[in-house]
Image 1: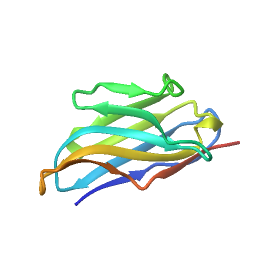
Image 2: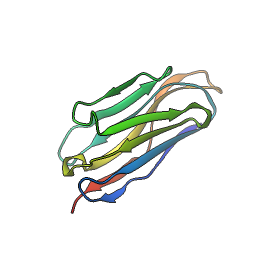
Image 3: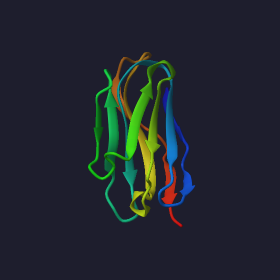
Length: 121
């Protein structure tokens, strides 16, 4: 059984910073990809940032230069450092990871439960 557990959301003023964390646990053989998505009220879910084995990263245009994704392979954890936050960044942020199970050898996507980020004065 594999789980993704997120932490670090909250309320912050415009211009502020937050750091999200997502730890994968359970029967993990390998993690190919980790990323963050978000869903704002009334909008579709969108990719925020992703990082693959080897460290290559990808960002949505709306967060480039403000957000940084990083990964600690030893801890099976991905982070999202969010700086210069704007009200339009308000959303539920979800962690996503493509993981091969050590038990079943299956390769599939897993999702975290989501963490609320609210940017407001």
